Length: 150
Figure 1 (cartoon, rainbow, N blue to C red):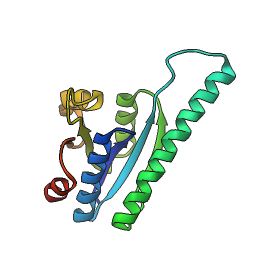
Figure 2: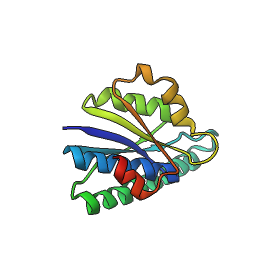
Figure 3: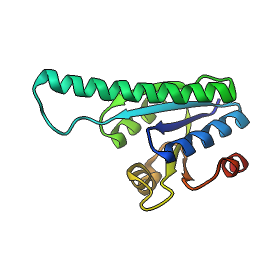
Figure 4: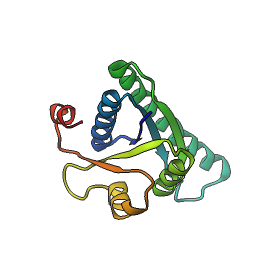
């Protein structure tokens, strides 16, 4: 079974990537894995405050991932696998791919304007070292264009 890994966050490009991954999975009999990233906090506050800030960020990421999962369930009838991980995005994604050799493709969305985004920039530069293909979905595509291309 084909597994399409997509990163979910609050950006428009992540929704474009999710739509593409969902449509690809539906057409190939595959499934989608959603990975929500929670960056480590860059400052060091008092222990209790730091823990509260990180927990709130994790809760926000879980809500976002569950919302996206609900949309996928509604559209495809299949519930995606959800993971929420704390850490640097590039490192977390590489670890996830190492832990899940069944992933057939990493699907990322590029910003519709300006630089493509830090994950797209990193993984497109290092695509030769990935253990699966990298799909970069242009952020400016309409829903109809995504459906046609997927």
